[in-house]
Amino acid sequence: MKKLNLLDKLIYILNSIFAAVLLLAYVLPYVPPKTFSALSVLSLSVPVLIVCNALFVLYWLLKVKKQLLLSLLVLVIGYSNVGTLYKFSSAKQTEGVVNSLSVMSYNVRLFNLYNWLDNGNVGGEVSNLVKKEKPDVIAFQEYRPDESVKFSYPFQYESLLGNKNQYGQAIMSKYPIANKGVISFNNSSNKAIYVDIVKKNDTIRIYNVHFESLHINPNVQELSESSTESLIKRIGPRFVKQQDQALKIIEHQKNCSYKKIVLGDFNNTAYSYIYKQFKENGYVDAFVEAGNGFGKTFDFKFFPLRIDFILAEERLEITSFKNLSNKYSDHYPIKASFTW
Image (tube, rainbow, N blue to C red; front, side, top):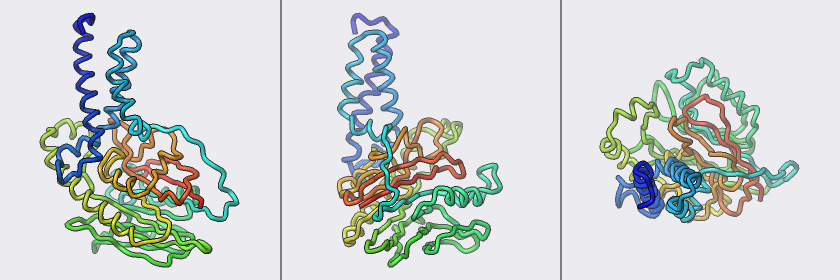
């Protein structure tokens, strides 16, 4: 510090704060939100903390200063976290493989029912996208039935709420659905549904989850007008709900002997407690195994936010993962392929 000029000293102090906060964030997946819900909110900022620390490393490197070691060490300590932010992968050949399955997950935001987007044909655009991608199974969150939106899947399961404007979740499949059900969440309109897909002699259990929404408006002005304290008070209890919801899914899947896939809108990141619970119970992140780039799934203006996931048991080999950039919702669709 003695050999630094005043500006560099100030930058190093800022660097130290960002490094310390990122170190603290590494602990979050091990801390149940019920223990300290306010701290859990920090998990949403991990991507930007990683990028900022990488920029500090670059800054000190260009100045040939040993201060680069601070953020570099923090990034090395959290290497696995950095790996979930950006990926370089290649797809494996699955054509002609008998034991294979492709799945897609998409929060469609009610097909633009309330005109959030300046597009009067969102339902038709989504239908065309699905026809183009041809997933064997597609799972929708924030879905609503619409006579003008047609999907040519012979086997479909919908779980809906509401009277005038029904909404909920749906799973559509090319293959027969042998079993299906709903997993309700306490004091929440969110839920999970599941189906057992039969392909030849194999049965795959697919969970379509929609964990508690955080209701964060990505509008820059609205976020800047909200104090940190009010955001924490509003979001913290929702993380607690997510903990209960995720553990309910994990407990439910233990009673199923089939190969399993969990997909949907987690409303949280790969640096969260709920994500870690699935990892500890034998699930593999399809993006981490076969994705490319930042894996952005939510239209957040500050940094690439990945809150939609396709997770699979280790018995399933992940052969490809794809982030689609079609803007027909505030979420982006994701697709993965598997063999076994």
